[in-house]
Image (tube, rainbow over all chains, first blue to last red; front, side, top):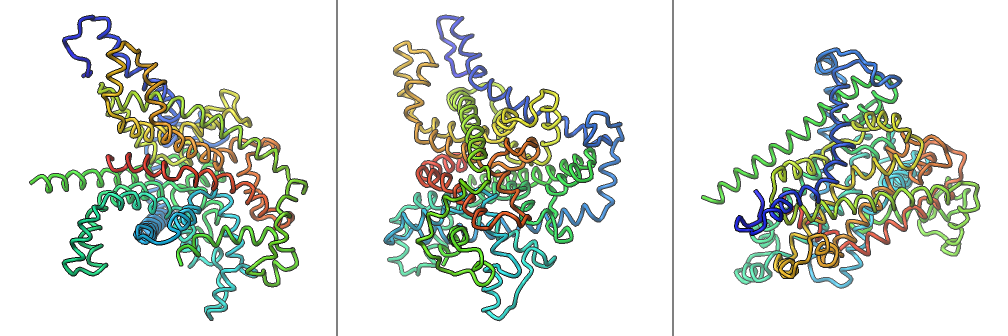
Length: 305
Length: 260
């Protein structure tokens, strides 16, 4: 199915046109095959063996044992729950703050460019640097977070040490880090909303909130949906921020699936088990993606009617 | 309000870097003594091999960006201008890479690089980083080229100009802003990358800056002012470049995301 016209006079040229796209795309495709698809397949194989870190390829085939062990262990389900809570918190938080910031920036206010630049910064800050400063901010004795809560009369908190707060703190840091992405994308989408429509609604007596709900929101919903999907699959696989902040603690309360893959492989050296956890986590992302595309398609059908 | 929340941690990094040690634990001032700002540069003479780490990060980031863009420009052009068998598969794989956790692939990659003798070196790091950032670059380049009218290219083709020359002479300059944005994203993804760098590289003098900085977490020997000075030096380039190209980042990303 090439775009080359069937009436082409020279056959050789036709053949060249037929292989041309493969030449262009081929290098990248082979690269991904070599460094992603094949390693992925190897990971899938590991998940059916009892391979260990010291001898990755010396594992014996154990069938579905790794998966069976996981699905009957409480630890896996609590890690799954942690992942879901973390993902939900990060997605909702970043969409909320991102959209609010974008709407605020789309108003014609003075110094808009400066505000936008300031709000973009967290996204640009390297995770490791962000984690360093947040660990200091959350420091129990001298951290500024506890100075604030003491001043407010809530008292000092063990932000990263208290099992009740660990997940919340990690989620807060993640939202801080990723909301600018939502903001920038939504801001671009807002620029596509026809100004006349908003004007018309305002003339008809709608207040700001109403204008947003009836005119602006429907326009940016498609963007919000794809951003929500990206945020979701990125949150499910996020490693650095969580691992560096808490290492999965306190008492495993921030031990998401991805963190437990790493710990199982590099602390317990159980490669097979780690790969199985990772595969199940990947299934989670795939389910989310499939659900997204199915609902997208059924919506499109509804619109078409 | 949002701006205060967004900007505070960065401000605090700066505040901590220039506050004298004894004040940090007895009530760090909310507004630091700004005349101490030049002290940030003391980090270069503090015995922390920051320059070496930054040099390593730069090498990895430059090579990753170059390799990713080379592959991405070719693939982006192919995906944008041809309809061919397997196009859907390539598109699917590109999207699927966004779901793959690094933590899952790190063991097979570790085994692969151990076999190739690429562990404990920057080359392996470049290869792994490229695999993860290149798909995003393809996506951005493709959507940038999608928005260039086909007629421009057709005129050149009628004149008998080969495809490759068209790509080089016409498509590249026209999509330059998006490619620059993609380059910045690639560069700093590799610059910031932590997981592969910390797992593949053992020698302290081959560490990238992100691994070097992370080594300060949980240790109490290095003074906090040194730690945060290093963090600032590491962070500033990323912020500057992101702000320079943010407009184009957005158009590249949204063009991609709106179309799915």
